Length: 452
Ligand code: PLP
Image (tube, rainbow, N blue to C red; front, side, top):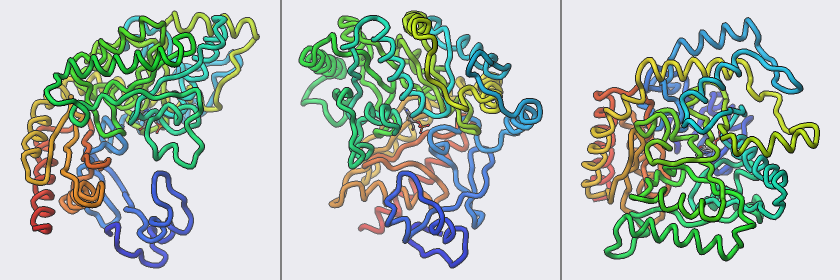
């Protein structure tokens, strides 16, 4: 079915409309159009209920690193369910899968990150990081140091605190967000925002100067941390310009402000290194991981912290008698067992290397597509990229039309504003990268012909 056809009575599509309320849709539109039922997956492909095959060019939600049919993850989940399907990590209890994954994450992450804490989603993780930062400031006797800086177009999830750090209007509007402790600095969108003749480095310096100005206006002693995705994802794949992270980190250091690297999309090889912090020479106090940590086969996220971040929190919990936070599913044994196996497979199959090896092809195919009359520009790093479509009279209609035409060609991507975003499974092959972008080229030609 297409998004504009009317579902048959009693079909899964009709029952879906009747019984389910979906995230991230216009509910009234959904009542009319319903959704596309995806029935099964295999490698980089998913199949809809009519049997039509699509290359999943966004890996689900930027997350299915191993593709849609990794049997080893299913086997590990089955074994863990039989051995110990559930146990918690509260109240001086622990279990093997959470210990093993914590150890693994500490081993593969930047050396100064020495402990892992588990949650179940990117939003939950970022929300908890905000709480940890507030707890830590209190522990340090700096109760006024609580403000958090996010960035316009940054995305850190949708829970109340994480959603407030997010800088996208649609995640705030009518939800009474953001909370007033959250403030937002500029988007490092060189392509859109650079001034005439401004170099990338000069642009980055201007971003850092704007950040410093904001810190001084708010009062440096009131600001605890800044959150940033090394490469912005849901804001439309915005790749940091030259020097950006070095300039930003220098300002944060000057004012004793923590840096939280949200690697929920970038982590586990997406940028061609295990973590984007390596790609961009970022030294975060906290690193947040999710999505590719388990290829999203199980809900899982992790917060990696430095000793310097941990110590005051540990002291405070000792003073109070407890770190009064935790979820029933914190470190869930099935999720952490699947996560560990997933990370092992990423290493065994050298999928980080695969992303690095295929990046030149991926980025050059995007750059070629940017020469199409409907397109305006391309950008990307590793296996994460975007093709910017020239706007039509109705905002965002152009990219939406191309994305829909791509579905007919058997390619799924995500259109965000005027950008078509690509983030395929890390197992993708050269042949499949070419097939994906051949489908995009055909879709662009068809949309151009229909408009002529
Ligand atoms: N952080 C980043 C960078 C993300 O891209 C996302 C989701 O797309 C989140 C956090 C929120 O993760 P979740 O949807 O699992 O809550």
